[in-house]
Image 1: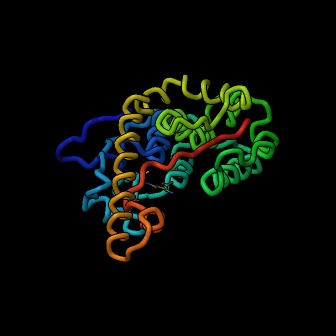
Image 2: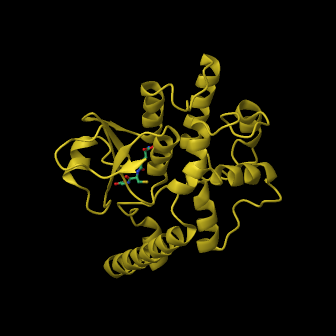
Image 3: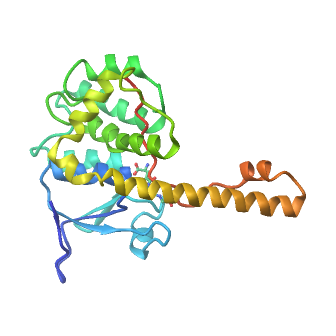
Length: 250
Ligand SMILES: N[C@@H](CCC(=O)N[C@@H](CS)C(=O)NCC(=O)O)C(=O)O
């Protein structure tokens, strides 16, 4: 449950995040599933706070969870920490050591490699096993990791006009995603598609303008083709929340 900061006293749990960040949503969702109270601090990723830079000097990214003054970064590490520190309330990882290792393996895989049409068979056999969620009857670690971000698929489809996951081709994935999105804690965590759409459209405009500007600038300087120069332009400093494009039929 999210609560307001109480002037004098440092909160037990404080989360630094960004409203559209799927990595932040993972941690918010885990805190809600575990019914833990936390204070939330919204970061402007274009102008990061001193606190964020101090708390996550290595990556300088959100989310950062501060527990009794001690900061932790990296969403999956934070999720596992929450499970270790509060094992009784709504465990996210299975109790069996082998199953725990398997869930961690797939989380790593999801963060590392998961893109459209990757790993369908392996995920199905290796982790889903025909259950309602990867976690079994209820949402677990892998559901949180895969699910937070999957809603970006709809946003990307809308903004780009490209169909990424066809419901007919991936019926299990769609059934799982609908089930995941229907969870109360998930509904509380994920911003509305309209808000995400507005954000994604703005971002697209910004990237197009940047590419056009870089292209024109480089072309003027070197007399080269604007198209080539735009392709060579560096990526913008603060990319959007990376979608975990779970285009797999689980
Ligand atoms: N691997 C990190 C990724 C975190 C991440 O990429 N956060 C983005 C927001 S979605 C960020 O803070 N970006 C700011 C930047 O790159 O400077 C995790 O799982 O927590």
